Length: 261
Image (cartoon, rainbow, N blue to C red):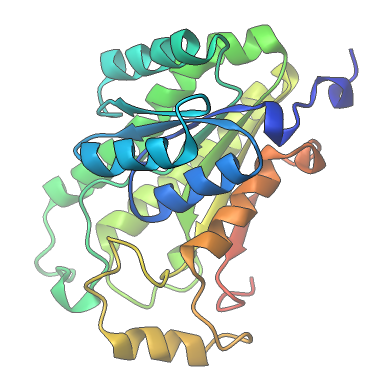
């Protein structure tokens, strides 16, 4: 079967969005639901928000599912719940969950004070979590002969304007994992890509960001605009769509042109 024959339209997909109950994850869930996909709204602590979002979409196409994505057992149970609920396996995985973090440069520790356990927490929440979800989804994706894995990154690789040492290091590792997995899983018809943003106006994580920072970023972009979560979510849809069937191992920066290389 040719690759293009295996592509699944968005309206026929079953999507798992980790950390989908709030912030950027909520916008990603809504974007997929708008296109007709079935969505599992994963959460760790945001039960109320996740259940409200699933109810907003409708129980026939969305449900809230609790799992700590750093826990391999819970992630395996998550994908089993998806199969049981929708009667089919996940076709797309969006690794969006973010370990506890506040995007406020003034409050983040600088090089002289940051501790290794802060790095470790970000690696657990970003890299280990993504590894868990990919490994849990992989048997089903291989059986289907296709699949989409989309990791959420950051433009701080290219322009580290704030001292988010731990967060940026973990996301850089996730980009490396994106590219090595793209090579490894390509023969199975599975694409692995990353969508990287800058500061978003506004999510739960960026709620502590001073307004002057938003204004400064807006003035530094060609669009004179700070990207909204809804705009970022639309770019995620591209990598899940049939139009991206020949794209893998890529990192798409969605930040209004703040970073251009």
